[in-house]
Picture 1 (cartoon, rainbow, N blue to C red):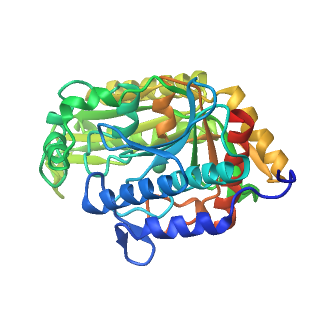
Picture 2: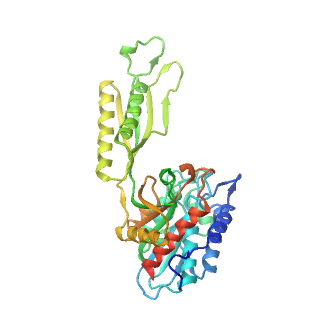
Picture 3: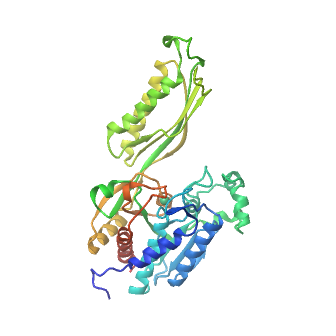
Length: 414
Ligand code: CO
């Protein structure tokens, strides 16, 4: 039996696994380019399966290629599961997703070595896809399969940026798209995901670990502002119906609204198209995205009301025709108070300083919340950077997070 302050997790395990995994799809010095169902992704999932088997877990691969490891408990009930995703942005870094998989393996390995068989079954999962980096219109392919949220025929409709459909790519790997519903599970009692923060808050506070209370809600729009195309030299300003002027006012308006509401409200306009897109032409049409997020549902609704009122008013006043398409709309996801308390208790017991926080990014945990209670643990990201080869988390911070995860799993499952 360990003394309470002796660490369970070996930082060499964490460091070695992060480094080895980063070799599959290595991109330049520190980047990783590992898109779902590519040879480098397959090799990485094989490596994860090998580590799980070495740690003495029962390995399972499901219908979409998620890799599971089970440490069977003496009780026959549902499992507590931990893990994250193995795919990356193109290119991304070594930590987004991968660290959650590494931490899960290292934590469960340490628990088995130290305490043996648990009471409750513990599961580790390496999810096949989260990033939407190969298929622009899907993300959470792995976790959506687990919760049964992939709709019939979706694999035939989704097309990869490199050409083939999801169904064709799956077939090539020996995965049968008709069997996707088999990946749905009903044996999970809770899901805990460790992930890099991907933001600057832990670094600002000088803390290695954050315990997530809510995952942000969001709403994503495409706005089309139509006006009257005309000559840039001959059309007086006072009779123009200029969609660029309207778009500019809407864009600065929504951004300033989120800014004025203060943290953690965020609104982003990240993509824009202009027609006809000429130097000397008042545009006919300006289209752009609006992505608005808040982890508190009431505040999210307030932010959205303000945005909608603003763009309606601007379009009316300027005589512009505005069309608004909603691309996604998701309420915030509340983390389970019991799991949050287990993580907080584990951090305290390990003497690892932490804080409670929200997640401004969406994660697989949000999908799992459809079938079970969820919680998340963040570790500090250097300069808050992610989705980039520059993303970095120190071995010390990664191990601190893994230690908290291991102790929380111990408290829950033993
Ligand atoms: Co991620």
